[in-house]
Length: 340
Image (tube, rainbow, N blue to C red; front, side, top):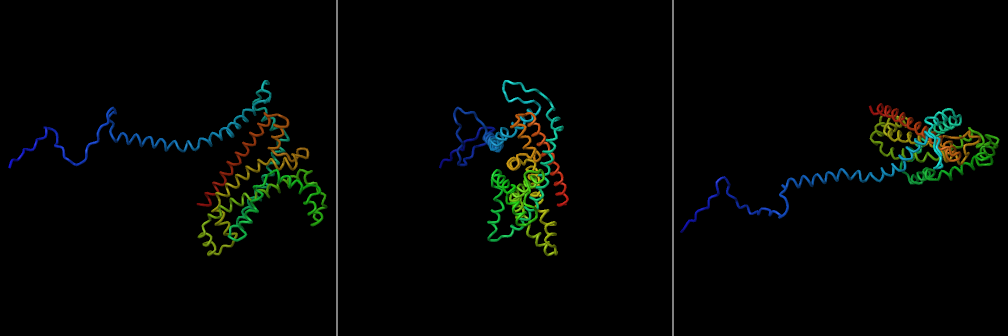
């Protein structure tokens, strides 16, 4: 029996062990890149795509916002510093802050600002109180609950023009309101000219604003009430708290963020009242029911004084912005106390 000698490995090189796996063949014409380098490059490309994806989704909205919101805002601010001329061949004269000084010296502007503030003060609190009350009543499940929700929300989705015309006829000299107050209830003589006087016209306009806005605030509060922990309400009941104490100690702190949202949005909406005033009174009589938006509309689109109209819009935007900031600060402090 002949024993063959085992071949010796070259000096400085370990003998290869046959593990059964064949080495991967190298591809001709391609540079030799380590496998770890490919993984890092692929991981970097995936990370870059992951970072880019949100911006691609946001891009259409940002582009639309820039075209529909930012550009008009910047253009309005620019126009407010000029005696703007519509004719392309005419030169718009730069007047600096002249339009803003003119607004501060304009009695009609102050009257319109006061009417906007009155409308906001007499529509926002009722919408909050009544909307919250209706939401609490409709919180409990019942067979008629969907019907009442739809009925209360119906004014919200109804056209402003339609309901403004409806209220205009209700508050007309021979309308249903005079008939009810005069002939049915005998509270007045039934000959009140509601839309011919500043204060009675504002009452009619505010009544429309409250009636149309209760459904919106009700839906916001109703959604917030669904998130109030049942355990807290039961604990309050076991402690002997009555309904008012439960509302003040449990419900209101739990829905405080929704309350902040409703207040801020209603205040902004109150200063943006336009259609109801334009349809019901047209700013009359004698401009006594003019609000900021109707006055701005009159200056810009009836008198074609776009520079002054733009200055009024900028002032309105500043007023609303400041009020929103103040509300956020006040409610944030109040929220901190509530949850402390």
